[in-house]
Amino acid sequence: MSFASLKSQRQSKASRSYVTSKDNAQEPHSTTIPKVIHSNDPETPTPSNECTVYHGTPENVEMRVSATSGRGLWAKKLIKAGSIIISLRPHSFALGSQYLDSHCSTCAAVPNSGLLRCTGCRTVWYCNATCQTNDWLLHRLECSALRNWAKSAPSKNLSVPSDAVRCLGRILWQKRQEGFDSSWSKEIDALQSHRHYLQPRVVENNTHLAHSLVRYLGLSSPRELSKFGILSAGDLTDLISRFVTNTFALTSPSLTPVGVSVSPLVALFNHSCDPGAVIVFPRSSRKPTEEPQMQVIALRDISPNEEILTSYVDTTLPRSLRQAALKETYDFTCQCEVCHHDNKIDSRESIWCPKSCEGMCPAPSDESEIYQCVKCRAVVTATESIMDSLRVGQEALEKATSIQDTGQSSMLNTKHIHVILVYVLTDLNKALQLTTNIIPILVSAGLTPSCHPLLALIGLHKSLLLFSFSADMSQDLLDEAIRTSAKHYMGLSALLRDGHPVRAVALAELGKLLAVDEPRPATSPLANVSFPPSGPPRLKAAYKTLVHARHELMIGFGRDNDGGELGRNIRETLVSLEKELGVWTQGIHNTVQDALNSSRK
Image (cartoon, rainbow, N blue to C red; front, side, top):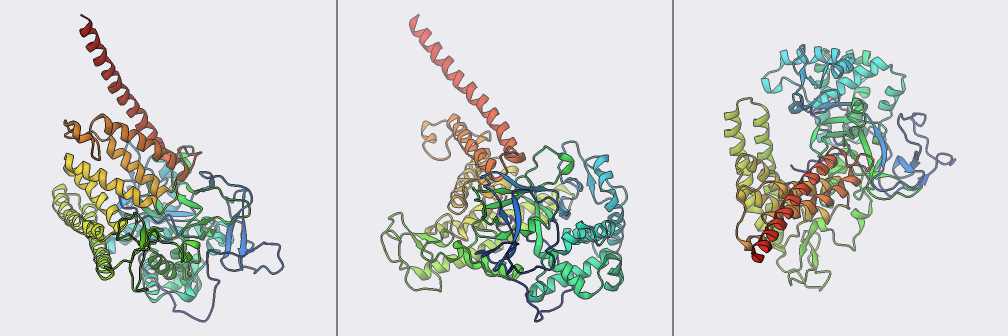
């Protein structure tokens, strides 16, 4: 699994759309060093949507307005780490096309007993008749749109519109059903639009998305959108911009992106590259009929009157890539401490000391000529060589990711198993060979495990090894996957705080790998000296790792959720390991007792 694609932030997987170019209008830019202005302050800026009442706002949180970051959410009292700040069902969501036949389109679950397919569109599936009935009010409109889209599709691979198009369609149908003056519709309309300063590439993408939406709704021109409350090109532009800017990834309990979702209340949280809270879909199991539940979880203790901040981008990326992503999608420059702590080495851009003193140096770039170890002040001399390695690593990461995506696409777009094996294994083996060759080059250049692009390549290498292991369950592949998983967790631990869901999931994966039955357990006593160990010592390592993983999951996925579905799964694995270790310990005890009895005879 690759966690670099994690977007429990407002980033859509949208196609493209109808958007006007920039004009002279201005909107407040978001930053993350807020000057708090309370709502009763006479100098408080008055947002056009200040009267919007957000459904699901908890009592310990309130919306305030900052002079620098606009609207945001603040804690009214102490919020402890692992607490659920907000829990609600998204206003709207849509599964990714590749997950439509494996997940319920009402609750996003993956049921054990199989799914029921809609006999009309033959595209969406449901857990049972109850889920199908609950979704019918919207799906009766969606069903017809899906059938018409499939009839006019140029190829089988394009017979289903993107999740972005389908989610937008559901939003417009529900706005019409709820009423344009309803609180549900007003919350959607209150989402911030950045249409006045969109980047050219975003304008092009949004224009394509708008054209696809008009076609999906069965309209011959944008003018027919008036029945959905869209009376002008500006209204359509705002709708698309609000959607793209405020969309969250719908994820599985283990953080795999499976679709898109929209929640106006959760969209109020402002950004930091060192967030105090995260957005997850843990599946608490308490109210299955209300799933999927989008939850905002506190990663650390949040003080009263402190703004609650989440992250919009992958915070394992270096500052330049984070800032570029934020500028393109949200049009602001982040001012958080992580981005502007110039006197501290950023582990995302770091190398080991050339004198091996265990200190770190900033990774060379075009910004400076002298780089020194912060511990012993040794000067880095091979700057050109290291910069070349960084460039090669970035190119390899992009190429390997592209190959992996192509292979997975082949797997999802065909039902013939022999075709899957030929195309997928060929493509993924190419990507695996690429990561296998490039990672040692970056390591020899002195990059730390948390440095980009090494960390991302290690994560990708791990996911490729896991796929290969599922096809060829060899001891060597399993051991290599375990070592790579440990390196990945080590790199994440240098960047993400204890309990961050990405870090917690990575540790849970390592523990599960250690607990896998060995295809060929080592018999030599020396085999247990290296990592990973073999036999009972490996089970002990798995147990300790999973205990730590469960601790982190309880924070990142909520203590009241018992760590979510993944946390409960780890708890069951721990019980199983306890029994297995108990049997092993009892066997040793019996053997020793038999030996003692024999010696006494």
